[in-house]
Amino acid sequence: MADVLVIGGGPAGLTAALFAAKNGLEAAVFDTDGTWMHKAHLFNYPGIGSIDGSVYIETLRDQVADFGVERHQGTEVTDVSADGDGFVVDAGGESHEADYVVLATGANRDLAESLGCDFDGDVVDVDVTMETSVENAYATGAMVRAEEWQAVISAGDGAAAALNILSEEKGEHYHDFDVPADADELFGSLVEE
Image (cartoon, rainbow, N blue to C red; front, side, top):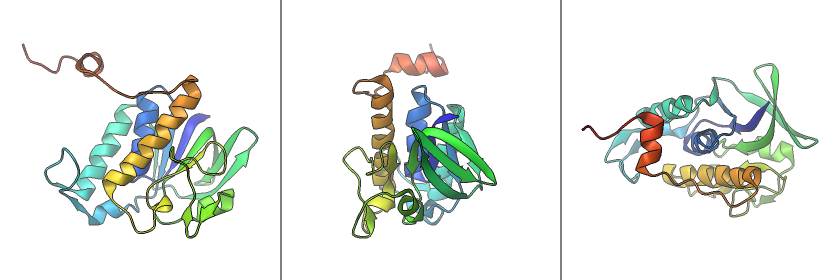
């Protein structure tokens, strides 16, 4: 059983998985590879001069894999349901359980509807932490925004969802802020002597 199941492998979903796994939660991502990033070229993403959207997604996938995120590439989720204190996700003929679910399926809001999330017009209604009306279920990116779709916004939504999950799990407001010593510990010395 994972702590967090993320449905969608675009910037929002992968960011949610990254923040969760980087901070000690077990996370899994279900990714049909239908992200709009394959049609994009980013030159407005802070810190990135210019990068093809597919290259960006591959970099993010590698990054989440490095932190131990279980990736179900090419696996479509057919159902998500609340089950007691957690969630059950049906995908690829198997059921997966978790305490939290993050919906990051772009403008496809079908799973949010079947889960019973409240809507505000055509978009999923969320609070500032990206939590839906269903406790411990989060929605991100294009699901919660009417025509305001952009990779940076989506990644920020995914980060907000993961930080709220981490705050819930840790029992206090959680801050994901690394310093050079953290990177040195994780990756080895980044500065050549």
